[in-house]
Length: 299
Image (tube, rainbow, N blue to C red; front, side, top):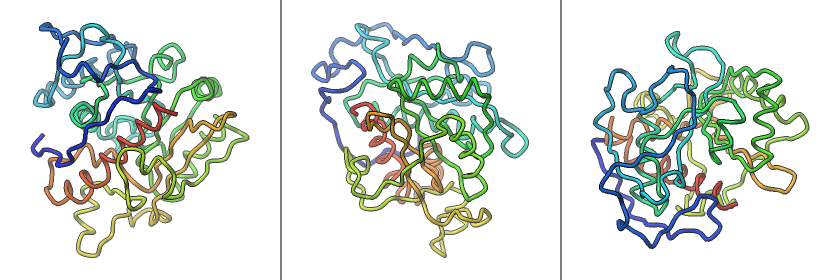
């Protein structure tokens, strides 16, 4: 990464954190051997287990770090969900958007800025109950034309109602909302997403956000900079960012839907343009992403 995040904040461990951690250890107890967590994600070789090996090793420059040898599997792993959909610009499946840069950058910032011990590698997870059960938090990106089987919808419903949390990100306009909403209705036929107001704790639990931000892709931000446009003007209905939640029967948020905004590009492209970094990555994409993770793990 070309720039360092300027936010200086360390978060004291939460008593109700679902993943085991010991914030008093600091740097002590780290093994001289680079212990690695066990990954339980996809095993078909479609992507390498270490995201730094993706694209023939073009990501070797991303930071890595050792995990505590005592609890190598009791750390937070950023898990990306693999699903069926159309392709992005005819080249790759949409679930791969911003991969692996977004995952590696965000994992690094979690490790750097908080007391949450974080897996430097992350994981990719299928819609499979055996894989999902190892991850309390999963990330879904670009779901505007996702399609699910009935069995996959049931797997996701069971995962979410049994304590799992899904963050949905980076889809724009009415057309893509309708595509995602069809899948949402398969998962939860009788539940409606609820718009979150700015006073909701998820916007303030770690970083106190003054607005519900709209984070554009870096290219769209650069094109719209002079006019102050941060939405995707080629997709009707994308003007206003929405953050919506789905709740389980106990009132626990089990899904956070980030529509008409793109946190993942704020993570992926932090080193592309100093202006984009200052205005979107530093101010909003990292703070809100960290807020969402900590809210998910403490509620």
